[in-house]
Length: 599
Ligand code: AMP
Image 1 (cartoon, rainbow, N blue to C red):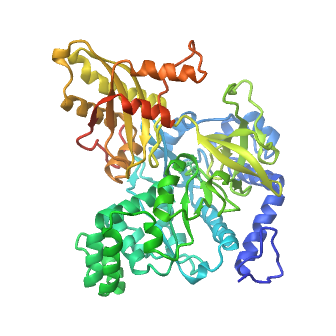
Image 2: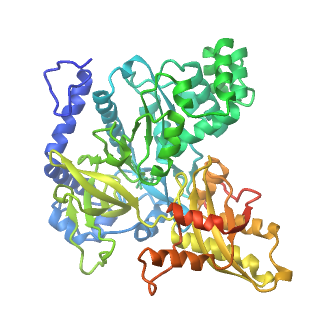
Image 3: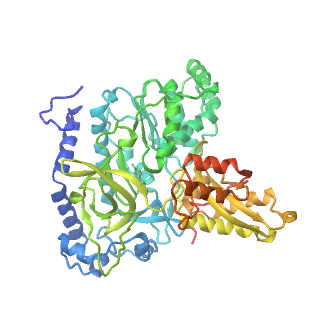
């Protein structure tokens, strides 16, 4: 029920007093986009005035945009890597930030095959929390009654490591879930989870997922929304239920917890809530033993009003499967964030996936935009700095690459995301996430670019040499029809001596050789998270890639400029390739991965 708080909001009537304040804050920030941005930049430049980085570029304590823009170069991770390595190796001097670097956040973006390390400071945690605090009040505008039940969210922490200099390196969500902000969050009736903290805070994926699923089943009638951070994570939970429902229902029937869940704090908290419930166990068996899993989410959790998962960007490929399992429930994409900085939120979280746009909150960092024209990309050079557009000045309909300056000390850093302006809330622009630059293949949080794929191909094809066999052409496809999804690589081979052709066994080894060459995020998804299945090579008939070219030319491609695509997702092309497959091969074992970085 909406309150008459005296503070109305153009976004809609707030659900409670606390929400009214939050909505008011959103209004204030978005009405004053440019002045908030100016203030944020001045704050960042003031507090970091004595850092080595700002001094290197002779900012001399200036806090105005003109000086900042004329002196500070626009950079990528590779430009910063030498300084980041110094911090990682133990240099505690103020290189990027006047505040001490508390830890590194490991991005899913990689550099030289390893996760990028993003230095962060203590108060960034509060800033992230500030953005999280905006989400629920906005959701309450669209979905009433969320205080009458719970959210079943599948949340996980991952392994962390230490850098040679002793700083912890871990993903941003692991850092957040392990923080006091999360663990001791004040009770909010609109935001109650079925998963106790203990089940989230267990690094063993099986135990954590098992316990969270069990809690979700025990509280099935209270569940009002089901979610995970990304769509792939929610589908993995469904797959987990498919594989483990028998054991889960036995636990529910007997009131005892599966001994494979050995974490003492999980066992303690589950034992307090698990009592024999044969009726519920029978229900779970009845629903799960059926071959037909269509609508399983709404059958098991009948009061679910929506799915809370990101389905924008690379996750859009999962929409059909989510619709299948949920009977087409609305999917809400609430926020847009990264390890480097949390950016903003979706002010209409119940809109269709195709209409999702994120409003960047001007208080989160200082944002600039490189106009993006895929046909004529801007060349960035230090001698003639390009004109970057400010947040308040971006134009409707145009595409831009996002550049950020953060409190933690990243200055004019290219995130690698391409965004399109689709509207404004007050003076704050709203962006559609178009894509991440240079990502060819992605199943989960992995991002494989063209050169990584090329290197993997070269390493795998080296195994063909003794067989006098060469690779004529290749392309790839992210197959997400199965859970987990997997990479498919189409190979056209030229076997020069049919009496000495590569064996099945050898082609299986080629699959593994490719996986060994892919970046550490891919290998972690494959090994530790099981969120990517074994890589598959499909060998196609000789002449297939020529047919592909004919097809492209028949659709208007220029014969002179034609290059085989390194990734395909257009259904007729995938079908053409599949119809020419002569043999299929899979990795027979998992590639190497440990939390430690390869040096
Ligand atoms: P990471 O550095 O691993 O935290 O990943 C951050 C990246 O994930 C962003 O730069 C985006 O490319 C992507 N991302 C984050 N939020 C969204 C979203 N809501 N929709 C699409 N992509 C997103």
